[in-house]
Length: 239
Image (cartoon, rainbow, N blue to C red; front, side, top):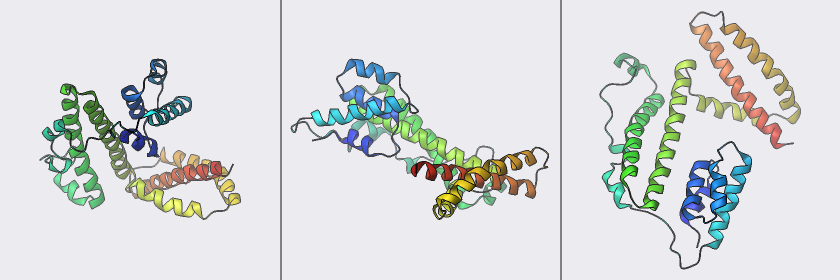
């Protein structure tokens, strides 16, 4: 029987190195490998591969009579309210009531979620510091890292909106549909042209005053950056 938390990490297409390393620290028994993995990071293909193989090996060694390690209701978590029960702040950071009313509902939802995630993540962190059970601490660590990763992503989306007037996530969906329809020849041509287009638009921004025209150029830059990234991924997939 495999270990549920390891199975979940192995199946996650966006798995984080730090989470996997903590899992191996808890369930692995090779001290040298633990030391090697401690020196790795998300960007290291070598360490990620070693970690992936190590956790697969741990799962293969689990005996049938070892219970599936899950914590559907960890007692220490009872002290922490659910995310939706965290009250929203009475004052919004850097936003007046008039500015708030002008925001689209999508951005308001992002603000409200991140306003709840910040204190919730801190509550998890405080609980983790006083939790003695190693397995419970791991569960709390995993939750903290997931929430802080989400916080960073949300602030990035909010920043994109305030700088460009659109949510980048929507731009990516729209541009992906366009790129997916292009032939390899068209992709190659676009990959050569986009850097030139981006360079010209960025040069224009240096002398442009704030206003509607500048916002259009900013939007175009973001769209082309997304296009360029999608084109590279499609070409790499066909190499």
